[in-house]
Image 1 (tube, rainbow, N blue to C red):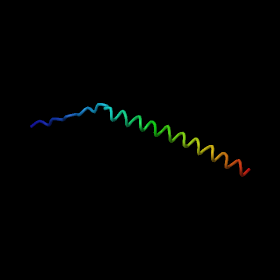
Image 2 (cartoon, rainbow, N blue to C red):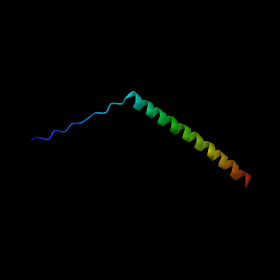
Image 3 (cartoon, one colour):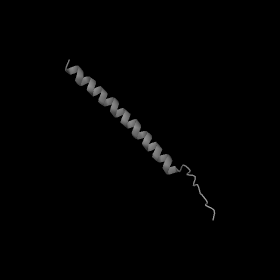
Image 4 (cartoon, one colour):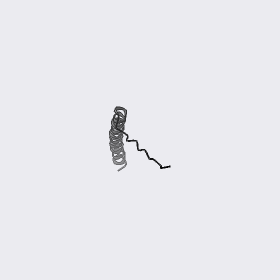
Length: 49
């Protein structure tokens, strides 16, 4: 008996595209938060000089 392999091709769906946008938005939000925290740290460091 021959062994048959089947390959399922996964097509991007609307849901997957929405998830990617959500992940991209989360990354954007996280980078904005990091920038804000860096400014807060810089301000705190200046107050101790």
